[in-house]
Length: 246
Ligand SMILES: [Zn+2]
Image 1 (cartoon, rainbow, N blue to C red):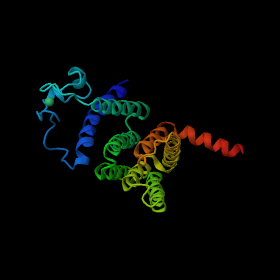
Image 2 (spheres, protein in one colour):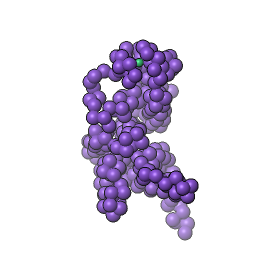
Image 3 (tube, rainbow, N blue to C red):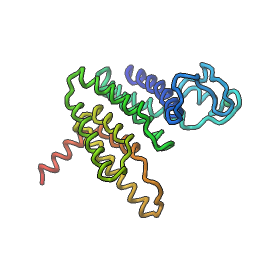
Image 4 (tube, protein in one colour):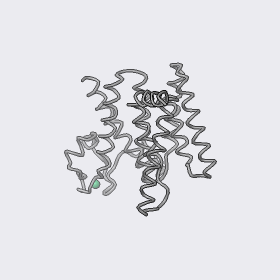
């Protein structure tokens, strides 16, 4: 219970930081300066307005100064981050795995949001996470994680070359972070799931005649990664049992 609550709080705080990154990085603004302000009245937010989740609930989704509406995205990102951190902390407690999965989760949350809003995954997020995860793998001699980074990066790079830009550079760098964070086995499961889920949805949209721009891929990479993170072992066993049973 201790870890559940501790990581829930930690996740909500980092989710609040993720919100800053989601808004500012695609706009090429500094994430440390100026301090947080209301997008409507530009008023500087006071410390009591910066509490993750609580402030939004207390203010009922409105700016304390101008009553301008605060996007539901803010508490949503904080809640998703808090729940993911709590689940990871509960399952893996205080460990290198927890550090790796929390780092990756935060990078995935920011990437999904900016990929949907700006069709862009900031390098600060993908390569920043990749650097932290590469150092963690090196320090703990987890060669499978380094191999995972190389494999996922290479596969998406090849897809990008073959499809002539059908896969963006941001996706390739995010895949590098995913491989480094999950290791090669869970990383490959994540990639296969992302392609399958993305392919199914793209086909459904195509059949319904809503053909638009290509779908952002980060949400599918994130979905695949989270499924592989929590249930990768079970999926791998299931897959092996099917192959052996043939
Ligand atoms: Zn305001």
